[in-house]
Amino acid sequence: QVQLLESGGNLVQAVASLRLSCAASGRTFRPYSMGWFRQAPGKEREFVAAFSFTDSRTYYGDSVHGRFTVSAVRANNTLYLRMDDSRPDDTGTYYCAANQYYAGTYNQPHLHDSWGQGTQVTVST
Image (cartoon, rainbow, N blue to C red; front, side, top):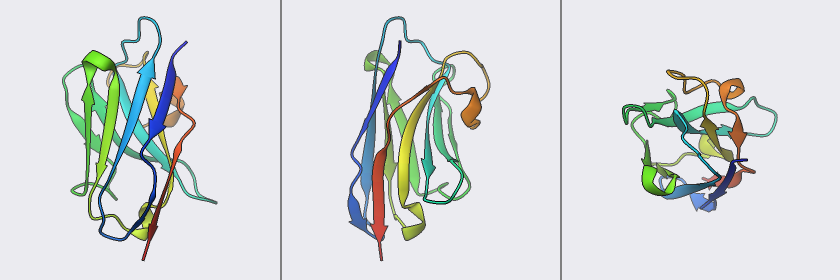
């Protein structure tokens, strides 16, 4: 059983920076990728960013490309998301997710088998 625990969510003003962390625990945890998704009230869950453990490539959603940076430390199964130039539209609950079974996929929520409880990010004007 894999457990994912997010931290770092906060209330910040627009253009401020924020760093989210996701710590994973569990036996024989070797995901193909881990990623961040977010969900705002009344909206569908949206892909934010992902890190591939296969080739260390990173992937970003269009709305955050150039502003957010995803990184990971394989040794301790930790995923990070640095948010720069934050905007009110970035407000939402940010979820960490792991994909252990599907190589080559990173942005589809239904192909992620483990999810954290989420951490709230609020960006004010």
